[in-house]
Image (spheres, rainbow, N blue to C red):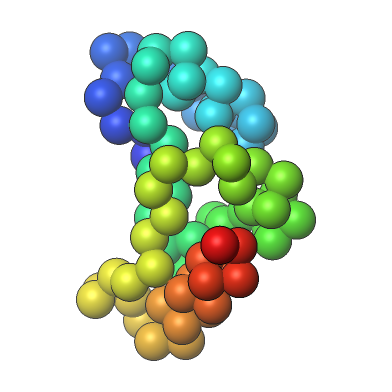
Length: 82
């Protein structure tokens, strides 16, 4: 997760929900890059669904991912939530 427009660093090790709250407390935006790239630490789908309303930017295409299927999965997920 990336927090945009932050003034202060957010400590590592917070839960997904607590990280979102910390970003929001600073008036920041919550950006979820390459959400299904299994080469990085990613939240499970239940966590994504539970916090979907709190995510401002959900990346569905990243040209640098190892597999196109990661982008395909992100696009399918995003399309299913609209």
